Amino acid sequence: MLTLPKIQAALESAGRGTVNLPPEFSQEFVESVAASIEKQFSRKSDRSGIRMSGLGRPLCQQQHEIAGDKEEMDYTTFMRFIFGDMIESLAVLAMRLSGVEIVDLQKKVELELDDDIKITGTLDIIIDDGSGPKVWDIKSASDYSFNHKFGSFGGYEKIKEEDTFGYIMQGYLYATAAGLPFGGWIVVNKNNGEWIMCAAPDDQEQDRKQYIADAKARAKYLLSDKPFRKEFQPEKEMHKGEPTGNMLMPRTCSFCGHKSKCWPKAKFAPKATSRAQSRPGTWYTKLAKESVVL
Image 1 (cartoon, one colour):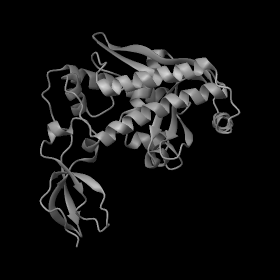
Image 2: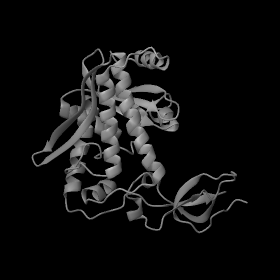
Image 3: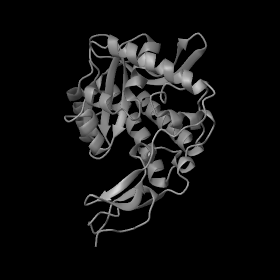
Image 4: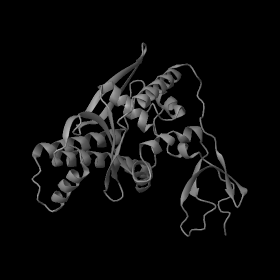
C-alpha cells in the first residue's frame, strides 16, 4: 500500500536511529546516485530519437535536442539537477523502508505512435497502491512548485492549465507503453523535505487518448522537414504602466538549456524595476536600463 503516513513513519524511525537498513537497499541507493552523477557530469545524452520525457515540452527545445545540440546550464542549475536526482533516489529508498510494493523501477519502455513512429523512455517506478499496479513519476520540486503545482494550491487540473514541462503527457506515454494506469506524481519538497502525492484521476481514458493523439502530432512535426521556429517572443518590461526599454526573456525560455542559441545576447541581471536592497535576478533579451527605480 502506498501511503504518505507509512513513508513518513519510516523516515522518522530512521531519524531516531531505530531502522536497520538492509544492505541491498543501501546498495541500490548508491548505484542509483552513482549513475545520476555520471550522467550529469558527462552530460552524455542517452536519446535515440524522440523521448517520452521530452515530447510534451516546447517543440523548439526538442528541435535543438534532435539536432544534437548540447544543453548548457550555469553551475547553480547544474547543482539543482544533481540535488534533484539524489532526492529522487532517496525517495525510492524511503519507499523501500516503508514497505511500499514496488513492482518495477527505472523500466525502459517503447511505444509505437504510428506505423513509422516509435518513441522510447524510462519510467520511474511502478507501484501497487492497493488497487493494482500503476505507473508513478517521482519529482523533486521547489517550495513554490511543491505547493502551487502539486500541492494544496495545485493538482492535476492545475498542471493541465500550464504544463510547461509536459508532465502529464510524459505520464500517459509511460503508462500506455507499460499497459498500466497512470498513478500521478510522488513529490519531495527540496526546501524542507516534505512529501506529497499528486494523483491522476481514476477516470483518465479520455485524457489519455487526447494526450497520446497530441504526442503523435508532435512527433510527426519533429520528424518532418519543418525549419526551426521559436515558439516564444520577448515581452516588454513595464513599470507604472510605461515600458522601461528593456525586453524580458519569455519565462519558458528561461528554463531552457538552449536559450543562448535562441537569445545569444541575453543577460541575467538584477530586476530593473525592483526596490529591494538585494534585487532578484531575471533574464533580459535586451537590457537598456539596468535600474529604473531609485
